[in-house]
Image (cartoon, rainbow, N blue to C red; front, side, top):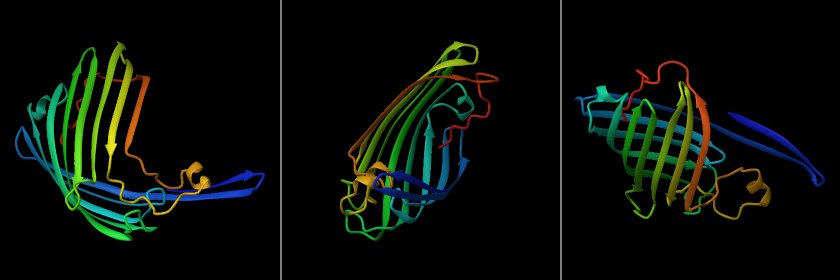
Length: 214
């Protein structure tokens, strides 16, 4: 999508033009009741992420503690991904790169339990680049939905990330205007988020369409 906004200030008009467009696709095949193979592909062009063009191809394998047929009630999975990607940057990065190939791997463990009183989902993920192990990321998250009455739930969400893999940050200082308008991604070493809310769901509390594979 494209976004063009004009801000009227006493110092003059400020025009903020950004764009983001991309794609993602994947194919997953169950090998047994406990194992699956998949392949993921994505592409992105984004002014915020300083990416003129990005594309990656990531094979994956997953193991499930419980048979997949029990996934609407409970699941504990471990997924491993390893893939190759290409980044072409709009501006030279803080690592003095205009383009680069990235080879990375990740490991993710997730649990999900759904009961009449509600459901719980939690996970932990770790990843790193092969050419530089210091470029890594770790994440832990949890989502709890507590049923109040039929269809109405109280939701809790929390997420914490340690971030050391932001390789696309543009070099040089960002202007106050660029920071306030969120024109580009800023360097950070961690991210914390959380929320509390209410949700109402129509239909069965057990979703027969839930697919846990990768």
